[in-house]
Structure formats: structure tokens, C-alpha cells
Length: 248
Image 1 (cartoon, rainbow, N blue to C red):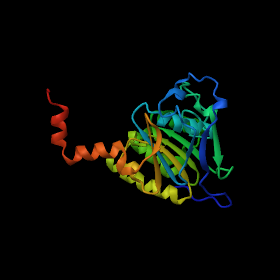
Image 2: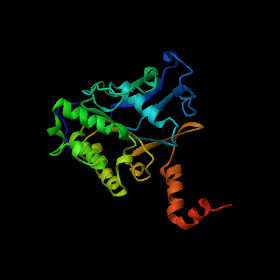
Image 3: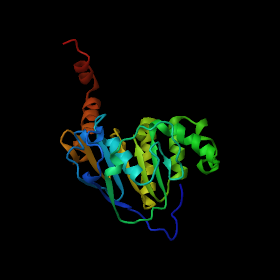
Image 4: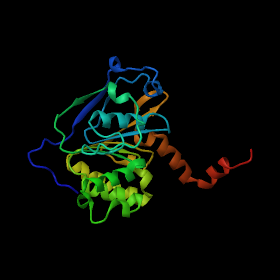
């Protein structure tokens, strides 16, 4: 874990995210027509950890990506030094976002996407900085091991955006990630995380926002659909399976 940098203003870094509709070039663009974003105007971020949750296609990853790009990060992931591109697929939402900041100076920033970790690992090797990410190449590790190695060796004091980190992690690894997350927060960092994992979103010092048909709503942990569905299944898996797999 990278150590706190002396003489650098600590986090939090972003106070709120504002949609400036005068900056929207194409109102028909899909991002502006997602139910969760149709009436969106502004969103306050938690000074430590903000979670975006919701169904697939609800807009949580679209919003996360847009905030990351608005902070000067590559749409495909990585640090501010990584400007590689394989396929342009990001939305136009970032162009209409305005960020209200606590501090202009951010010592470190990263955007990590589950589906582009391979490309980030390749760029790390191309830049010749692999030694900063542990003793073993990220390409020589499993997806989960590479993700944990990246977070443990590269994250310290800064602003971090993570898109569905659980895609790389077993339940046990997700528990270990909570320990890492708490350590990063202890470095006076700020994180925004889009997730489906009821384990990861259980982190206590945080704010959860649910993306859905009624917009973007602050939600208590136990009121999230992810928690309720998972708990209902684990409380009585046989009953749930009988209901799901019945012929009726």
C-alpha cells in the first residue's frame, strides 16, 4: 500500500457532481434517456466511499465512467498517465458534468474496470513500470489476484473509481477487499464504486445510491435489492429454488 504523501492536501476531493444540461450536445443520446438519469441534476458524494448500485443497464456504470473521465482519466481505465485506447464505447455524459471540488489538487487517481484490467496490465508493461505493482507481472496472475495486487501496491492517497470489482473476486477475496478498502480510506482517500456485491457495499462509512426507474435515490444497506434478494435466497435456498424452477 502506498504511503501518505507529505505536503499534499488530503481527501475528500469531490463534493458533488452536477449535470449542466446546457452542455448536452445530443439530448437523444442513450445516457440522457436512462430512467435513472432523465431527471438527474446533482449528486453529493460521500467524503470516503460512495456506492452506485442498481440493475444491469440502470446507468450506475455509465455515471461512474463519466465522473472518472471528467476527472481526466482514461475511459478504458488506468491512471492519469494511461491514455491507451482499443475501442471507443463510452457515453457523452462526461461532457455535461460539472464537479464541485473540495480541493483542486488530487495526488493520485485511478479508474479500474473489470473488463479492461487486461488492457491496463498491458499498458503497465508498455510503460515499463511493472516493478511498482509487485514482484509478479499482472499478466501472470489470475484476474482476482491481479486486481488485488493492483489495489494493494498502487492505491494510497487519492481518488479512485472502481467498476464492479466483485467480477474478479471470490466471496473470500471480497472480504479481503473490505480490509484493503478500509486501509485506503485510512490514507485519506475518496472512492466511488459501482457494485452488485452485498459484501462490498456493506462497508459502513459510506453512502449508497440506487439507480432505477425513480431516479437516483440514497438507500440504506438493508433496503437495497441486492441485500434483500441475497438474504432471501440464503435464508432458504430450497424454497427459492423450488419457486424458480417449478413447472407452474
